[in-house]
Image (cartoon, rainbow, N blue to C red; front, side, top):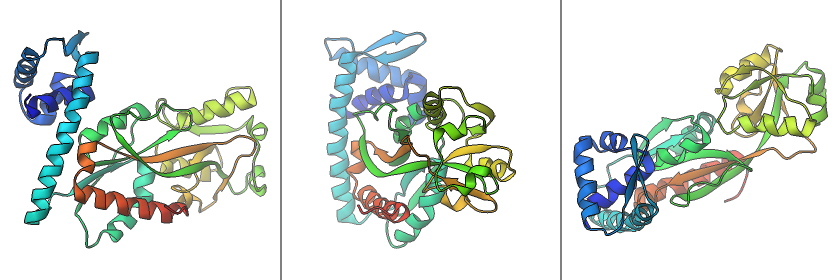
Length: 301
């Protein structure tokens, strides 16, 4: 079996359409279709099927794509061995992170790797279901999920960085700010700032609503914590914010207070394809990332 065709099959499973694979591989859609057809010609069971206008993997196709991943890992290890011998590791290690993680970790990581592999850093604040797909274009993806969110795809390697408590961000003159902690019942009549639907923290207010027994009044939908913090500082709304990565925002009138009686946390993880982690520069960067995350969170790795 041609490794290139196996990779295209896996890309189809990850990206969801022939057009998306063609764009990522910088080839025409017809070229991708021809390669997949050539792969199918040597396989006695269907590897793909039509779903609406898109071509998707069958169960057999997914099994072959998973097996093809091991081929990619072996090839990556071979390339890495040659690159290490020739000292040709100039390709930057690419990292994607959601906004607050990038704000908290990118600067320290660059300092930690001043004499290490070059980095290419990107911010990507996406819905929970979209984080895994980012590994198709980045060596490492810093992602987050709530405890009740679905686990990451079994096709990915997951490295936990830390578990981050979620606090209530309120104005320092708010009546609840004088307390060391806040109970869910005290939040019944508040005006809220939420993230957009589908994003990991959107489920927190649903969880709080269930604990209180009534829906929350949401006035604003804002993903960026910097913007949400400005509204909190105006005294016209409160928000859920992460204790570690948003700690630097608790200034100029905004404070963070923990919630009692209910556990609100998010898991911050690094996602990667196995073949990416077969490369020694990527492993070096991941080790450094775990170190700076441990420092930022106060946890030992």
